[in-house]
Structure formats: C-alpha cells, structure tokens
Image (cartoon, rainbow, N blue to C red; front, side):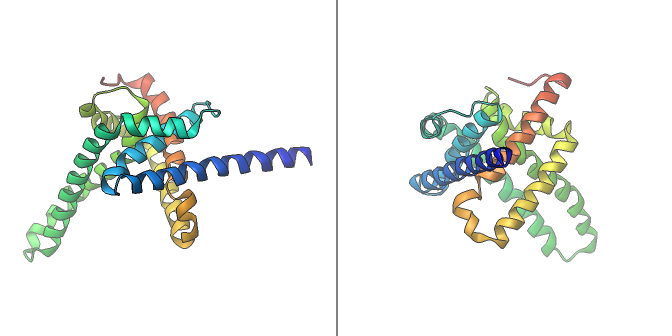
Length: 207
C-alpha cells in the first residue's frame, strides 16, 4: 500500500505540474494577443519543462516561466515569423501543385512533400534546441535539422507519440485547457534530451 500511495502521489504531482504550466502557456499566449504571445509562451513552457527533465524539479515555476517569457519575447517571435513564413510557403506550394491540371507537373509533389516532411520533423526539435543551447538564432533551425537527421529513433518516437497524444486530445477536448501543450512539450523535451546527449558524441553543435 505504501508503494501504491507513493506512485499515486508521484503521478498526481506530475499531473499538477503539467496542468499548471499548461494554464500559464494559454494565459500568456492570450496576454500576448495570441499571435505575438504564442511563441514566447511556448518557449517559456519548454524552458520550465527542460528544467524538470534535467532533474531540477523544485524550481519556482511561475518565476522561471515569466523570466523566460520576457527575456526571449523578441527572439522567439522572430523565430516564429520564420517558421510561419516557411510553413505558409510549403502549404501554398502544395496547394498550387494540387490545382495544376498538367499531369507531368504533378511530379513536383515529391520534392515539395519531402521538403515539407523535413520541415515538420525539424520543427519538433526547434523549441527544445532553442531553450537547451545558447546559440545564435540563425543556428537554431540548422542545429535542430542536424539533430533530427542523426536521431531517427527519437524522431520516429516523437512523430508516433505526438500523433497519439493529439488524437487523445481531439477525442477528449476537455483536456485542452490542462494538458494540450504541456504534455506534448514534455514528450518532445524528454526525447530531445536523449537526442542531445547522443548528438554531443557524434557531431559538434554550431554556436
């Protein structure tokens, strides 16, 4: 019974942590008027979760979140602009190709689809890299891409488990205010930390 109660307490504690940081993520996204607040809030959430993954679980959550939100507000929004622009270009390209009536041009789906896939896989590592490494903004995407390519197992797990979590959240929308961002961020940060440790033995990170 003592072991069961300890396990129940540990699970409850982690659920409370994830719920709290998820509420902060939504709140500060709204405070930043949605678009402007989303990327700094997401960065702050990953910064908090990174501390937990590395074993520092007694941090002042609000203070850590707020300090990262303020410090990285401009930088994370610049990163977000580039992510959004590239995503829009990829989406537009696929739409244009789908509307083309010339059959021979349909082959362009292959390179565009491949680039889109690589972009989406790289995005999974963007925020973990951003909060983990003290690198220039221009190197964040490059390092995320490198780490993604040399860690196929971690990347595969990210895709499968993130898809599973999104499916659960879609089926149970009541989870959105409490776990929609934090549980996915925890998963990505946890797997990214494994990838970072492996990458440090294989390649040199560009600072």
